Image 1 (tube, rainbow, N blue to C red):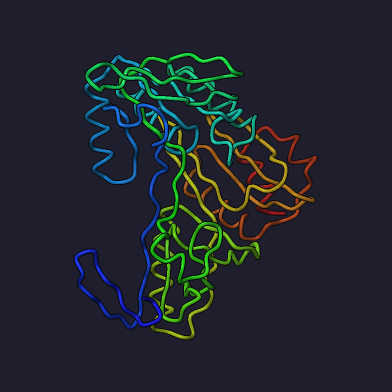
Image 2 (tube, one colour; image 1 turned 30 degrees about the horizontal axis):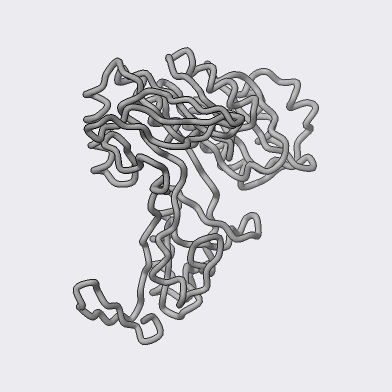
Length: 333
């Protein structure tokens, strides 16, 4: 009861509060409605215990097929980890290319080629998971997929599902204003009810630099939003949250970082080996910047570019082949 500032636990214990911080995060989307969803060998990742269990499973199935449903963060990183262990990953997703929320088709093509060189296979561009197939002992033996109305079973004793997450907002949806699937907050992370705050994945907050509401499922935002909310609770002069979107990933010997907003046409300079930079440009203005294998200095430069959002000569930038020169050109624009 947020109006009366009371919480009741499942055991019936009542807690009063002066201020409340909601940090319930997200839960993975579970493919519970698919046939065979309860078979042994199907993994989801959210908690540390999930990762430890998956690690043991991969170690126990070296040299065998491992199925990965999803082509985003979880899919990319788990497939790489499975290949490093010595398994044979097969990635299954309906999108035309991996990491479709960020990567352009040309970017993804470079990473997918690298993955293929590591022995990873792709079932993409329309492939959908229809059911989990098991043996008589209740163990996973494969995944039934479909493409253009035709079905087949891809064999595998382990399957990792990474198809997104949903905010854990059900306890509050009838008492707080909601937006983008999360709890709507202001620039101080206060919700529609006074003294009730929400932080991390669960919070739909004003993204000041782009003047729009958003939700961010990322560790950097989780930490920064929590610190900002605590400051705001005890200091009325705290300024509104001014977050710069930031994402990163490390797979195999690759490591990329992204700052800003992936709005506009991407201009790709270089290749992922040894180095590549990508700039998202709209009406001549740089909105976001990505670099594969950035140095520490590059990271600072990228953050500055994303914050500054400079105008740039697209023709001149597109003619470059050296990502270092491209970063220098954009930073000085």
